[in-house]
Image 1 (cartoon, rainbow over the protein chains, first blue to last red):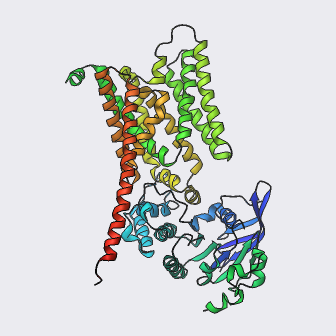
Image 2 (cartoon, rainbow over the protein chains, first blue to last red; image 1 turned 180 degrees about the horizontal axis):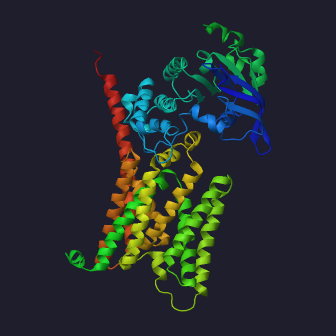
Image 3 (cartoon, rainbow over the protein chains, first blue to last red; image 1 turned 90 degrees about the horizontal axis):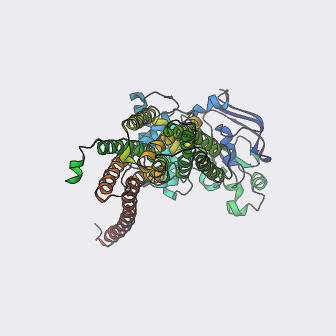
Length: 251
Length: 289
């Protein structure tokens, strides 16, 4: 099967400042990749490039073998649940409906197919009973589920998640990862986080991103990878047991 | 009953009709202005419109069309600047704001003869709205309603989450500019009711108050339109009864209500916090089952 997402010798940044250097990544169908890296290591820049919000300085990027602008319609983007104006007057249902914008263009009204699809997505993430709630009254974990439903409503081939468990309590965090594992049976997932422990139990393969990307298409995080990425003693991140973090969870 | 008797005069009926029509545009567009936090840009559009008033006087055409022209140009200019430069957009908008006004003042200076109605554009004169003005207001109102209805789902999406809308291939740039042009239309309508100087108050206050109660954009728009109507009606009645400047009276009614609503909001928040603590302590002290 062809790759869902391909980055080849990709350089990106702002003005004259290079943030990402020579990134190479091939995402296979139904992979579940977790990229970790420190804040300022280029995680959000990488997302912007994949979403077509930032032009790469050099290199190529393909989504499903086509350009970003044509391919991003198949990307289900799930932003951080913290980036949200609590006073914005909108209900859960209307947020999830935005997932259908890519299928129903300008001057076209949403149809019953769209509504069925959104209902399905909201049921999938367990938020259908909250569909009439204002988004501002939900917890961070519930809001994250709504964003996930919005992404799923677009029938994505790959889910792109930005710090999916930022500011979510531990219970909510593990239930989000349970859900992602379940979704992964049908959809490829790429998530970025600065929180190593958060992604440890769920992902299939893992990479480290800090200006450059260290990714070996396997679920083994070595001390060398972490050291190259964080450039500081690994104890700080993995509590002194870097080699044992992942192999224990192998299926 | 004096006010009701006076309704037989066409100027008062025109004023009330203008108030209702303008309130509808205000409720719809004001909602977008408030939730997108583009009050400052809207203020810039309003004041730059004065350049068009001056041009109208100078070249001898109806200043309202000059205001339409200048506010739309200001909307497109400021929108482009705001979206393309990331630094000092507020300074640039502030400069365009002042330049528009200065140009208007100079053009009026250069126009020989008596300048009738000049003050009415600055301070509003809803009691002198002509039938022609009413038709212009109606046309702009219809344009706003039709365009917002056509692009409603996209406008809400870009207000809520521009990144997601962009990824869904919504033409975010174009629609954001369209929204600013609709703000320009609204500004011109409001100019005739409360005057350019106070446009921003009537554009934002009804929507700002409505956010306290509304949990949905459509409800917010209806509520804001209704409130705008109440403010203009009450303002016209008070100004007629006590012989006050109508625009300022309308703004005073709206402003006082806004401050009152802020107090209610603060009180509600405290009430909810207290009752949340109470129910929690009750739950904890209740005997376990």
